[in-house]
Length: 594
Ligand code: F6R
Picture 1 (tube, rainbow, N blue to C red):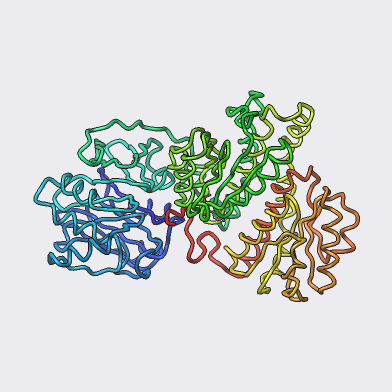
Picture 2: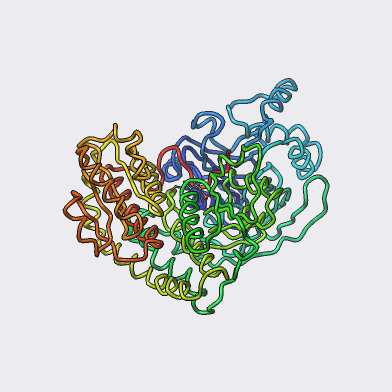
């Protein structure tokens, strides 16, 4: 988490830094700050969002600078703990994303040597360490300082009197935008799209010395100069604008028909799949892992693959797997991660490499760390997702899982054809759900006064219930629980009463009858039931208090359709409550800590 930026060029740095920071706020937004160099280093930071900093920050002249937007790990979100951090002489400014795990030890050492610390952060040891070695060339001092650090980091360093910015990364993302006579360093691509679509992705251990007309990349630990390829990004600026929408979240929900169409375009046009038969006769068991929403996509993936291909699939929460002593073997693994930078996922991949031969990653971010660790990367076509809560990326992940399963040579031809025909219809069906937005918004008003909401489903709709509950609690702060409908009787029934609505996903599939029984049992506990049900379902209307009708699909595709309904419910409930929807409290989009 945390977003870092740096600018060297011909423009005034301040405007560029603040603009880039506003594009990175999804990475953290509890405080922010900038430093600009012009004969001396001027700095301003506060425990506010970037918009507020823009209002209060004095004007600094200078064409080189660095900036940071924070998600607190060490020390409260205060102005003192905000970045940039400085050395004793205030000549060296550093912004940092990640965690320095040996900071305590380094700090004690530096204090014994007379360094004075002002913040509670781990970051502050970095400028002090650089100061310690600054008798040498700035680059050598930074190199030596970096060699003392343990943990993960992406940093940008501004040194008074040195006309370059030094940037480096280890297990934290960092890109450099290549403009004409200007360079922009950033944690992520969306930050730089206003200036250029040409980027270099730094590799672990790279140290970049960045001036307005040159980027020199060296390998840490005395390694030589290396060439890093310039990539062209085909995301465009409009994709990171809110446009006429009130929030990024609702814009991203509305983009889903296009996301699905884009994801299917090549697949249908070429009648082949880039990853034809990744799941094949050699795949006897598969493990799929992820965190949060991506984990819920993994759970849906388990149903899709087991059902269609008859292959055993194990799902793992990456945050649990990472600490597991013994790793059970599998013939292949799929990690699902929108950002490609989730620390739990990256560490799980590292661990998995010891026992799993074929590792696939499904990610939305080209050049991300996860994609570099995989044997095969499947890029989702969601485009940049700005709102912290995942919506279109979840749908795009599901589409890739369908494509993966449908491309397998283990699938019967006739089933493949039938499923492909249904897959083609999905953009139109999702659009149909979006057309009933105002009706869903009305039902959501009821929920905004509740203190607890249950989401239930069975079979492939159980993970959808988990996802619906996650979305609601994340953006509306209402307590929500996702449950397998059949589990309610094993405890949660005690929670149900007339003030506790239950949202039930009910598809026309093998678990329809048990789902109806669950709904009857819920009604007998006086809870209002909101059913999300197939348009052809004649019986549900008389049972549920409210029925949200969804277009008919095979139940294997219902996680997409129902997922969109639940996203709209969460959005409108949060909107009625007046919550900061795109930037929920205490969260950040890219979770780079474990
Ligand atoms: C929820 C949400 C998170 C992420 C999780 C994993 O709306 O966005 O639960 O899904 O942090 O992130 P990625 O997919 O980037 O690994």
